[in-house]
Image 1 (cartoon, rainbow, N blue to C red):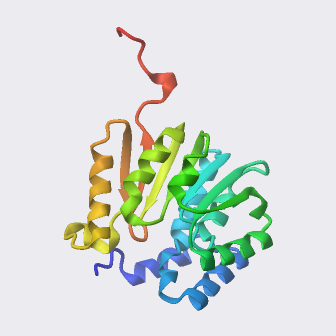
Image 2 (spheres, rainbow, N blue to C red):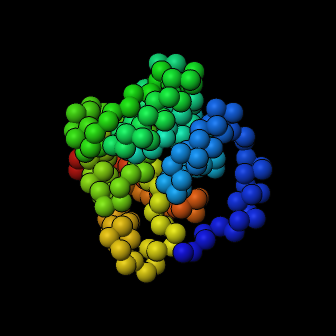
Length: 223
């Protein structure tokens, strides 16, 4: 498994980035205690702050998250939303959902969050856009399906953020189904003329995707 960023740099980044609120430190510790190896699914401080900064800088009011896990990233993004902002998050795992809901209830930003339990594609089919920010961090074999389902719901100036797109370096030599799914997703987005994208080497690789053409800037027919 390839380490994308040396551990010493990770420590430096953590020390020189904004600290987490105590409630989120507690959430991370409890997730590690209760869910063991699965706690690697936590987005963590730098990525959480990146998502929060994106939401704040674009003045996001509506956010859609595919993959709640224990609620860390949802709470980070919800903090950046206005009082009447709304974040819808989707997950299937009852044990993770129970932890997430318990921390949403304790956070002053939890009232902005609505957790939908069930298959995310079914939930997405019931939603109306626009969403200013979409964060995809769920089962890898459905990444392209999640992307295609959420892109039409994105606001013209919105962003889709996708986690794990470097997959611990396994994109360079894909073997398993998840490896191949991530490679196929990255290729799919790279070939999509509707969007512009960039991959950042944050955590396990984060892709940021935005629509190529803002409706107000589209050329008139015949020009």
